[in-house]
Amino acid sequence: MPYLTGPQQVLSSATDLNSATPGHPVLSRAQDANGNVYILLGGVASTAIGSPVKWDENGTTTLLAANAVGPVAVAMAAVTSASNYGWYQIYGKGYALAGGDIVADKSLYISGTTGYVDDLDVAADFIVGMLSQAAAASGATCLVWLNYPYAGDIAHD
Image 1 (tube, helix red, strand yellow):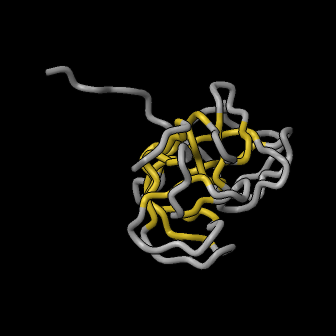
Image 2 (tube, helix red, strand yellow):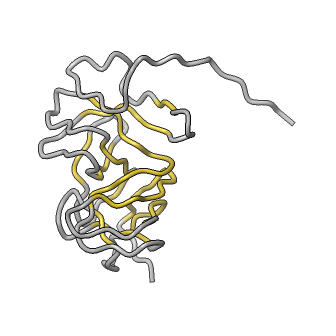
Image 3 (cartoon, one colour):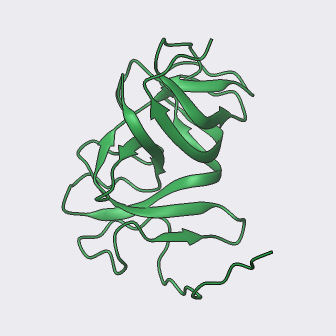
């Protein structure tokens, strides 16, 4: 059985980073003391704390919107400029903006409001790997479980 090894990482950054100089390579991943995993990505206009975004192989983000396809992350800071960088959560307990009232322990979907999630079943907008953990009101942040989420423009029925 092979054993995994790799370089030790020391990052001097808070998860609420919003900076024109990222300090680490874009797409770097880091883990906090609770086991939550984050990825360093570029920002996009209108990003708020908790905004779900789709990201690509270059570390570019777009606010999550209907029919998106690709990996999903949740903003840890209001990184509102494409020339700035910040940490986005991709694994563990986190918070995402609710586009409607959300019930606990439900599958999540891309909301009809760009940059939000909802538990309302929207055809072809299921987010694989993101579940609500607690109830939340529309416009609030919802406690979610993230497991390297992605949008595949698929239905979940």
